[in-house]
Image (cartoon, rainbow, N blue to C red; front, side, top):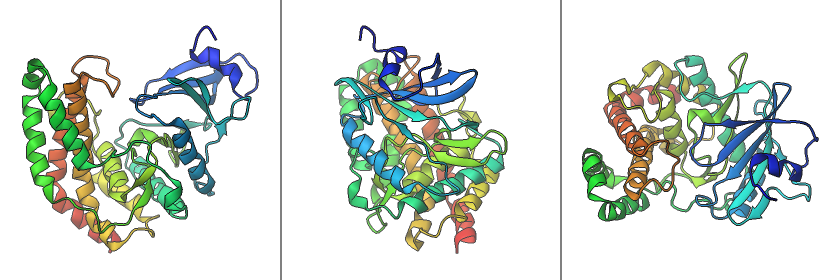
Length: 351
């Protein structure tokens, strides 16, 4: 191949030979994603995988294969992997250039944020269904695609190292964020989920990783299974809540717009309670803590990346990771202020 763009790789996948229009999809910070359109309809999703973030693509694709064996239900839409013409799960051009393709879910849509309680309810329902189905899968067949992904101690260590090596200008610009990170790390020193059961978690259940039916807004399935690994349910719970009850974008610069919408939270809990039979009492009691932990973890990762020179997340301007961090930390504060409220609602719905 002379070029490794999306047009050049299409002949290597087992799809009908048509004249496809390739449309970039901007949602997502890691992989490069494209929709393949024909006569205005979406047929496939094509992705260039970020091999700097995911160093073992074989392992990643094995996890997805294992998950697909269990994500089968009349109330869960299964996405199919399109194999290459030589029957491989992905196309490897070289070590740093890997592509894969999935079927597009017809008539589907994803939302970055919402103010619709019906969408929040459906999000809770489909996340509960996802976990209900995967609890039947053996834990040991899933391997870590990113070791230490939600390990607070590991992220704290990365942050400390980045703080020591950052330029004086970056340290000055991020001074308030650094102080908040250190203070919150002290507050979370007691964190120990060791008494909670390990589960197969999505580990990135932000709202735009859920597909909905365009017409009736029914949740169909979760997408982007690259971070599918063992973890604790509070990870997926906290990630979902932080992107559902906060009705502005993750990198919102006006921190006064950061919200904790109680109506959306209660609707999400209502939806989750419909498919929550797999949860233990200890997990349920720990759920509010997940809403504080996850935005903070994402925030400290964004802060670390900013201090390191933006080497992990995609950015469109130099300080975008700092803006993400400040926004996520602002929501961490909101979550802290609502801990008693969340516990009250969860107790009422689950006990």
